[in-house]
Image 1 (cartoon, helix red, strand yellow):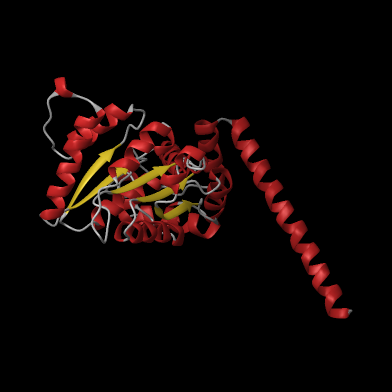
Image 2 (tube, one colour; image 1 turned 90 degrees about the vertical axis):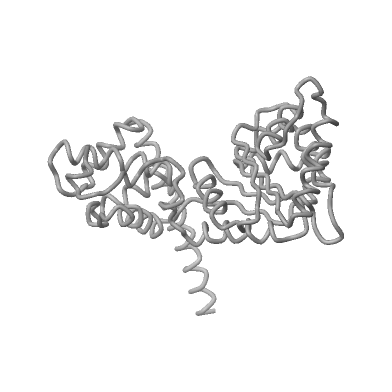
Length: 303
């Protein structure tokens, strides 16, 4: 609706995990570097965690773009599977033919291990990426660990990327998964964006579609940070609605007033007020401890 009105070539705030729109904040760059480093290491697992909407899936899409050409990738987006179903899905992703009537854990495991050995002999890397991995059952994770047992003197023949919410960290602390946890060669927790990064994030996504950051007033951007708490997915929802609302009101800039109205429409007034109050409370605590530290340092100076 608002694209031609603001001179945009595409929707800048779609929640689809399009890597072309990925804003590489220092945190996102570190996350991507950790994943790439882990996949080059000899271990079998790398892990990326973060709160809902922080950009984990988008980072994984960017990772896919950077993998060497001689890499075969199996992607699992629905991990609420049994061990048998997971192995069958891995076979599907790796284009492994199988006879359904013969289905068993051993049958699927043997087929996958044979494929891994074949890929290695043909200089093909094999990577398994599992999104929403916090939903994996412990017995499924153990089955994954067994798949990574096939190795040469230098490396594992299967590298597994686990992407999930913070609950995944708690899951891997369970005693029965300690062997798997020890095989994680790189792990990174993706944090929300800070205030400066929110401003750059909005400007970046607008720039990709030939827009300019001035479409949002400075006050609106500050409000975006306070209400979204730096979560990119929430920001996308709020900014998209704000642009729509500005268009319907025939305003050329998203003002603080327009953004607040859009946030109320998306989240509801109660949630917006709660988030703003939480932000003000957090800022008050920072100011208090800052003043306390300043007073302590001054006392030390004059002591």
